Length: 346
Image 1 (cartoon, rainbow, N blue to C red):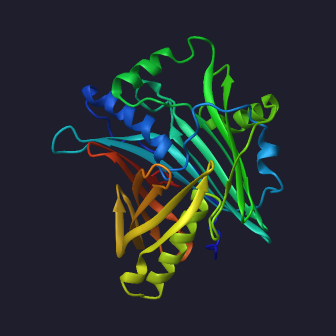
Image 2: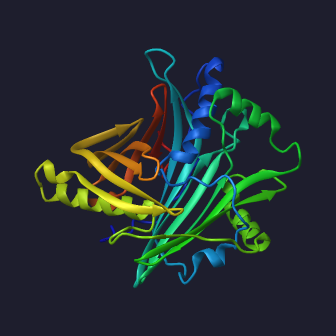
């Protein structure tokens, strides 16, 4: 897959707050944040309920060595709820980091996304990180996530109130390795003594490495052409679609997929359902030109569960194939957005 050129060095400046929803709706926003950290951008960042001990970062990376960073972008998270007919939103409740890596013999992607307890209602702290890398014939994946099993507003409120009462905060971690024919993955639960945030990712990875003692791996045979992770599959489809729009291909050829990927021993199919070229796209005060708005669907082959999301990404220049906006709406009444925000202006 061709990688877009690396942009100039970027700086992060704290964004301005665009307002908060009415107090009666804050728990709905909390539930949105809790839910979306699990599902946003991936039907894949989902961890098993129980698993043996985690072997650590070094074991998870297998034969893969870190590749140079070629591109890095920052995003700001906003949440919206729709109690009746109109959306009510709260901006600046969290953030995301997306990283592209590339070397002579491989490529990789990373996504760090979550709420920021310094900004989110009730100091909610839900976040996750996943990294996927292909090097030669092998692929490696590592991910960590703040445990979040809440399925309702009441469960979210109770969970926040209980957190840390026993002196433990629970995270889940996954490692996986894959060849063209087979993938092996294992998941574990990690307990830490303080409530680490997305800004503490290096510390959590160190804890995972030092405290783990090995894990049982789940193996699955892979059909020919299976991609070793969601981010790899998504980047491939974005590239194909952006190229189709650059070549002014027919509307039919601008859909893509399904592309099969594996996550935690389960096969998923990712498809681009529809896309359209736009001369201009505006989110808040950010204006982007020459972009594609695309609707995606991911389906779990084992359960049949489907996840949909929308991305807007550039077709040329420094933002070619780079998402500038992402929308995920798991329920009709709430929605989360990520907006590219390297300058903090919104």
